[in-house]
Length: 164
Image (cartoon, rainbow, N blue to C red):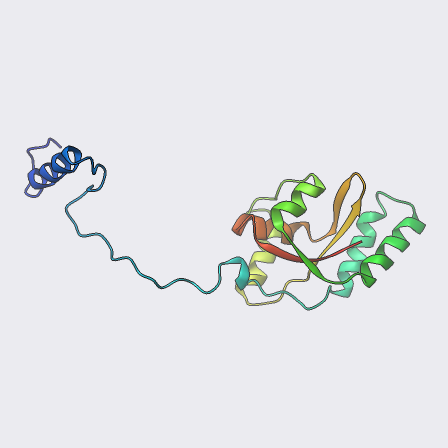
């Protein structure tokens, strides 16, 4: 469409030319009024709307034990899970958890992430994450998909977890 075509186009180009001349470019992109700014803000962001259990679900300790048994001997696993059970709940940002573990977040279409996303949509509570920390870094013993979900919604979102 050329500049001289259609009814409101000449006035639009006149406004653009005027804005350019006044160094206000790109203040005007169209001849429709802009939406009015509002002082109303959301009280919580999307991550804050995720509901979390007050403590880790028992079956998550079993899952952590199964995962850790692939990496450590039985005695080390037993001690680590005991430390996780006794640890107090805290929070960390999703991006920090993934960085410490040397992991990238799973995509939203990952089956595990989708399962947790459905729980969130249904209003169900998610279980806090279990993280094992060592001198060389950390590892997510249970809850990788929950951390990935939070990261995909907001990389700086807080995730409740226990650290051993």
